[in-house]
Image (tube, rainbow, N blue to C red; front, side, top):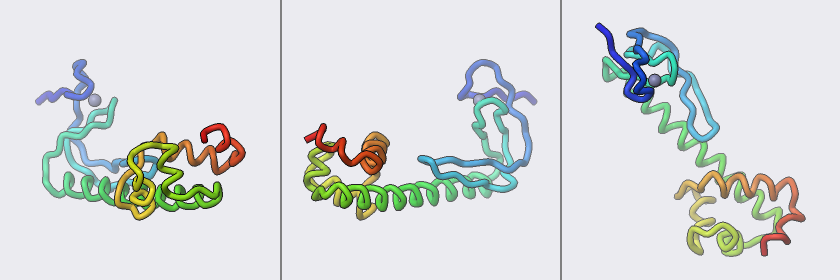
Length: 133
Ligand SMILES: [Zn+2]
């Protein structure tokens, strides 16, 4: 039986196999062992054949999302304090509402990558904050 990748959508054939799959979410990654399904050798998409494999991959994705959110919360709080900005001032720089930073730092909201990247740069080059206000 031939199955074709719906993501690639160019006739790439899927392979029915059980293999370890690396899952990546916002810079955090892990390996989910022995995932059974139709695997795309090009884009890595998987058409699952059993609920156990799809459940384990989904649980890994959720856990990585939580890990990334906690990591970003610490990074943003650390950088903001080093820059001597209040949460309100930091939110004014990045948009997203006056309490956006408080929500990021408590892990209640996921910041856009651009916000995290900006504060990574400002943490290394704090003098640049003057360019923004
Ligand atoms: Zn594919």
